[in-house]
Image (cartoon, rainbow, N blue to C red; front, side):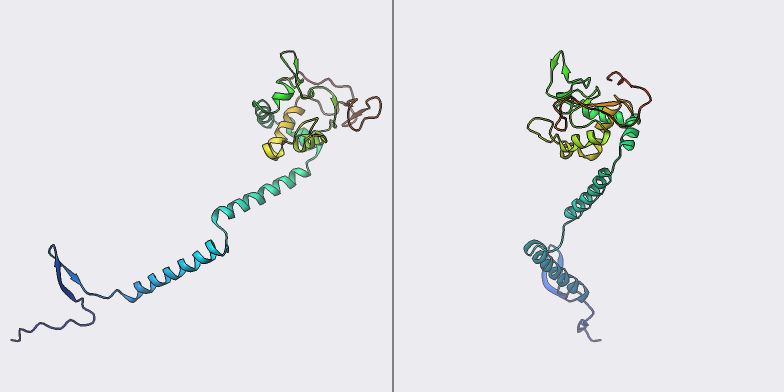
Length: 222
């Protein structure tokens, strides 16, 4: 009987003479599919690194999300641009919206700091910088959309009036604050233009949001 060891075929692993801790090493070539996967991965990483990090091609997931969120916000803002007096009055009759607006209004450093907790421009008998919001006299217009515009964009001369709050609060919270202010008024009540209003000439002129059947008195501040 021939005692000669058979020569391993191309499909059988070859063992090396080196042994460590009872473990003998294989001298086996890795499968081609594994090598090709490794090479493709290296090539893909190199291309991606050059294009994305060095040449500035492509967008990260964060950039895509930020862009999508910005587009959604832009669409909401565009929708709010077309808001009407009737829609704002409707919001002022929604308890959840009014309560959300009140929470924003009463937050320290927000509206309450200038207009007071009773919306009368007073705090403990002292006059605050802001104008009263619970009466029928308005400096920059008292229709819901005019109030909405002033809260969003600020008074025409921000050095002497209210700053714009749109960037701080966003359109949704601005609409909630306006709804809270309108909840202290009645639809159709007379609107009087203040004597120092930029559009006033001589004595303040009285206008109305609509033709009221009676002169309405603003409800007590909440």
